[in-house]
Structure formats: structure tokens, C-alpha cells
Length: 357
Image (cartoon, rainbow, N blue to C red):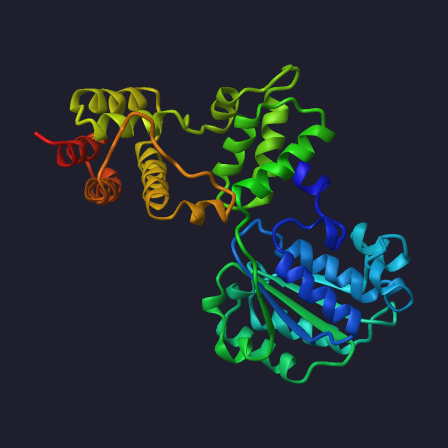
């Protein structure tokens, strides 16, 4: 899988989490590292990857001799982590090791000195999955940690973690990557792998993964396998392989609604339904398209700040009031699709609601 092959091995290779990287590197350079960290944020944004890089840097042989070049990925400690055989780095998946006995075993291990003689680092992934008793046991370790241990807790749901635990860790919030950031990384990987793919295809991949670079790399792997031998991979091929909805449907549908063309709007809904496109997913993406139009009307710089271009529909003028009606109507329709005996009906009613009679 490409996401494993191109997983960052140094801080400089990390994409989109500069605020986290800068602080961690500062702690390493000054020697002011904490004993417990919490990495929280959406899945696929680099929490475990950065935790491993940080763990390597803590035990890197160059840490005191050449602190600007850590992790060096050349010393025995770095290579052991890269090869998955380091005894100083212990990774635990709290989703499957969530009981008090598991944490007691962790505590017993923490009391033993690091085999390499430096730090013993524990990465606890999906830490929010621990039971209440397990959390209390973990809290006891965090209150009185051995000097040679460092804990890195990772979670997608920080609100489920006990406040007493949160008060004893340094928290870092990871951000979703922008479409632009993901696109640039995908282009870089595609170039190295000699995958010929159109820019629009790359953008379709980036837009479909909800800010998770890992998901984008998994999608690229799927496309690489499915389109093997193709000289050039188009956006249509990407949509077909990943089951994505062609972006062209959204401005077309919007144009019909803005111009009060009920018949064409209803026909388009029937067309995408007959093509086997999930109407709930279509509604979600159309609402996102409407949102971008709204933001573009209010302040285009907001989209530009996250690497998105303002959306200005061609040949369709619309008032802010009608745009709000569209968003409300299709948001309600999306919620009703699952319960409707006829999947197209909620969208058809929304069309009638937002078009003038």
C-alpha cells in the first residue's frame, strides 16, 4: 500500500501539521520534553506517524551531538523503529486492549528500564476506548511516571477522555488537511510511482477523503491497481473506480434550481438514481457545493485560506435568501431519504420548495 511506503520518516516529510511539528522539535532541541502527550484529531491526519517520529527522535543517537538532524534514520535506535523491532517503543491499540488488566501490564512494563538505556515510549492509539477502570489505572501511571518513560496517547474523540487524564498531558490538536495540501502530496507520489493521472482526477481524490491524507493514498493505491496499464487516468476513471459522483452534476443541478427549471432538475435526480448513485451522498455533496457558493458570496478569502477556489456558478444568478432556502430544503431532504419509501421523493419535494411556481 502506498500509504505505508510513503509514510513520513522525518519531521520535514510531514504534511499539514506544522504547528505540532514545530512545538515538538522545539522541545527536543531544548531538552524540555514532557512525560505525557495527547495527539487528538480526525483519522488519517498523522497522529501515529508523528508519534513514531517523535519516539525515534527521543532515542536518536544524534540527539545530543547533532540535534538539528533528528531523527537521523541511520543510527541503531532509528533503524529499529523503522523496522518495527524496537524494544524501546511499545504500541498499544486501546480498541482491542481496553481493560484494566491491559493497563496494569502496561504499568509493569513502564517500571522496567528501557533496553536501549534511554527512553521507553508508549504509544496508546484510540485511547478513548479504554474502560473507566482502565482510565483510572492509566491516570495512576501518569501521576507518578518513571523518569525513563514517555506516553503518547492518540485519539479521534478527545471529549471521551477523563478530565483528570487531560490535565496531565500536553495536548496537540491535529487539523484536517486541505484539498490543496493533499493534492500536492498525491501528485508527488503519483510522479514517483509513474502513475499518469489528470489534475482533475487528483483533485477528485483529495476532495473525497475529508482531510485525511492516508485515505487519499489508499485511494491512489486502488486506482493504481485498477487502472494498471492506462497511459493517462482521467477524472471519469477516478470517479468510476472510487464510486465518486462527477462534480459536473452539482453546477448543472444548481443551474436548474436557480433558473426555476423544475423539469430538468427532477430529470437529473432520476438520471443519477438510475445510474446507481447514492442519493444521500449526492445530497451531502450538493449541500457542500451550496455552502461554498454561500461563502464565496460572503468572503471568498475564507475558501482561499484553506486552498479552495471560490465557487461562482456561470449563467445562474441567485439571491442570498434563495440560497439559504436551498441549503435548508436539501439538508432536510437528505435526512428524509433513508425513511422515504421512494428515495427520489424528498429531493423532488425540495426542488418544488425552492423553485418558484
